Each structure stands twice: as structure tokens, then as C-alpha cells.
Length: 135
Image (cartoon, rainbow, N blue to C red):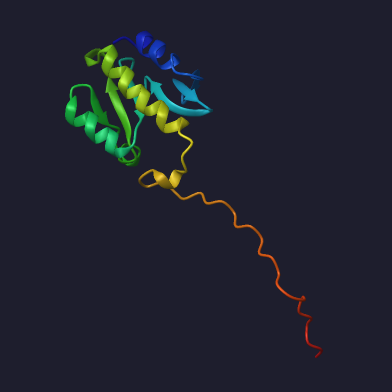
């Protein structure tokens, strides 16, 4: 897989756009990065997976996928060795990453996510309002 082929696949997802951060091309959906290229060199790319997805891909294709080092890797960011990858494998990994950033489910549903709960409705008062006692 070439970097150009990776970019073409990434841009094929609904609403995907190309941007850049840190001097490297990235691919976004809804303003959120789901993949990037060139972090470790011209033949590398990364995808934003869940830790469980990362574990599955690294176990299945260790010549293609490795966790990013440090905390980012523990959160699921996964390095791709592009020359070892094929289009079918990349479509699958990119689809997972794209879904991870476009899913409408609450973050609480994701392992390690923070709960984003709706605000409680104001409580209705029952009976007359209480007055402060004179001092």
C-alpha cells in the first residue's frame, strides 16, 4: 500500500476530509481525526482504534499493525506499516477508526470513556414556597 492509496481509501468514507497537524496529513470526519500519515516516516500511518480493536489487529497482522508507544498507544492509537498492508485490510481498519469518531453513542459506552450525562430537569416545587424565618 502506498501513502497515496491510503489517502484515497481514507477520503472514500462519508464526510471524510483531509487536513494536517504536526506537519503530517490527517483524515477527519465531523472534525475529529480518525487517521493520519507520516508520523514515523513516509511509509507509516496511524488509525484511532479502541484498545480492543487494536489488540485484535496487532494479534492478527503483527507485520502491519503495532501500538503507538506510550499513552496514545494504550488508548488505541495504532501504527500501520503501509508497505505490508493490502487494500482490504486497510479498508477494514479505516472503517473501524471512522466509526469510532462518527458514532453517536455516548462516550460512556466506550471502554475508558467519560460519561456525558444529560442535565437533570429542574424539579417542580410542591406546595407553597418556604419563607425565611425572621431573625
